[in-house]
Length: 205
Image (cartoon, rainbow, N blue to C red; front, side):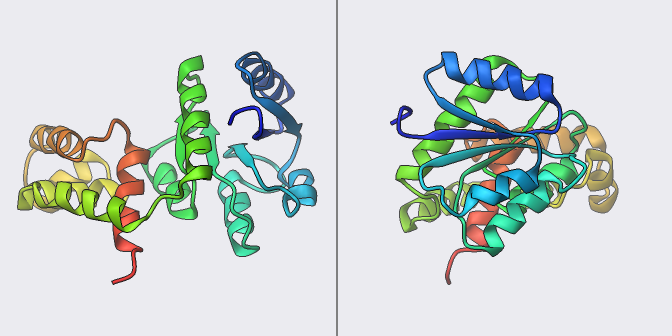
């Protein structure tokens, strides 16, 4: 499958583009690089089997705005957002815009390779099927009321301190509940948790 998919890297920093392109090329992927979101958009409509890796902060158009633009034009490409300035609110915004992963620089080689692999899997099987939703709902049902409240705070982009203040509990207690949420939801990262919650909230009732 990887030989059929082209990974498009959009980043205004040439060293980053070249480094990612080299890594993905030696991992067996076909790669194209773009120095701006605008240049990528010129050929986006003609893409089918493609994965997008985009930097978050770029001069002409942010990575989040690029994903929103693609979505508004009904161009469905799995997108991975990378940034050196990441935080929870930005991760949530990127995921709500449609990103499937949000990675903070510097990241290990296997992390970006794994993200591309997941993106390729989604090309074959789009998320949000009834089975996916049912499975996520079953996991959510295992959460206590407090764990559910903490999860909603995390997905809303709130810090542990903000969640603690809003729920009148200690930050340490929030950390414990947050760890329980990640374990019960069987997810390893914030983007994955956000993706799960959004898939349920956006699913047809």
